[in-house]
Length: 532
Image (tube, rainbow, N blue to C red; front, side, top):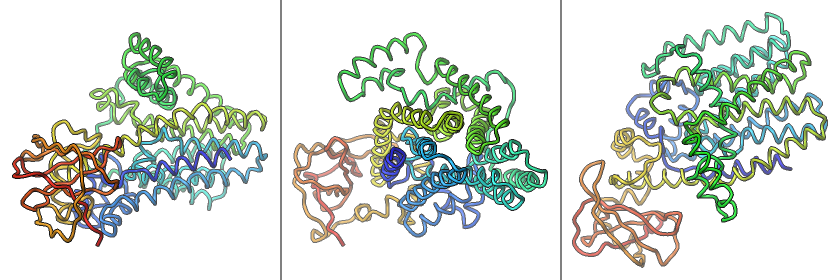
């Protein structure tokens, strides 16, 4: 029951993903529209080869006008399939009912904890992240089954994961670790090794030239970065205790009174939590010690649950090693990004793998109690990280509407979207009639709209102000309150009858929009486009 609730909450969060491009999605769309198929899906981006996700994205662009809905649906299916494959695969190990329930809950937390909002609640990330997890769990279970045929299929799963995202390459060492713990014969190693060599050659051939140079200099610094990176889930699960800004957003006065002074004292002594060494290093050292114990346990017992759990943790450890080595120069410039939420989808799997080993060691009842305890401890973060994810959705939708109008004022937050990527994508998307330009309301911009096509909306406290525009000529910011409820974007019409802007409802209930052009004669009218 607990596992079902965790999965259900995670799936609900996934469905709240913004249905507009956000962050890297703008750059991807510009690339897809600039290059012919299949060249536009065969290249690497920032060192990542994403063949399968790019096929989904191109299909969505061609068939669904880059609405993000196909990616959301595929991401939901991949995440759910990852959980079901892992749960049902381990069920074959004849686990007792109590232990099986604990395993299902542990895997649900690893995949659907809303601390992973950056992957769960962003369609562009969801597809590649959960394609990797599906390849991971399917590959590990096939490698555990044994036999040359299963080894070939495990190698195919690792190839699928590697061609979905750069982190997928770490599935290969995880699969090889399962073979080692099983003492598999050489004939089972061969297809996996050959597949790994083939993938590395393919990645080298399709490299995009933008990947950072790899340096093994400063080994101690890289190890420290890896240990701090491993502590990400513990940090975000207890975030209000370390960050005064987050503590101030805790919903109840009592909790704010408790967490506020603790977070302030911590920041005063250790500095900003995203840059501090402790307690991150302690969490990482604890994890590394537990991993060593899990490795020994798996080698001695060869039990399916311990072997798969250890290999899952090893996968995340390899991902972390790749990240801190390949992105070393990036982290030197942006040190706070080492603990960015986008990495939680991988670090969560490290601790999930260790938890699986623990469930194998403990008696079923105690294991079930441990899994429930972890679930309860994560409950508060399920709520505040969901709120953070909804803030990401708000930022994405607000900036997308401003982009459709073509007015990005200097104070408007774009979140993780780069202005350069946005500016490059807009003219291409406008010509294609895709993404924000597929909206019926956006198609009315700069048109003298027939009054029969729209219905005037009565508003209150209308405020219009001229703003600078990072995309070109100055525009206007429009704010108002609506006396009638509606969820769709509204048209902003000048006195001459030309639609020059759009507005959307903010989370606090007020309406915010932008209009093209700094000058207007007469009062701005607000209207709802009629269906059809």
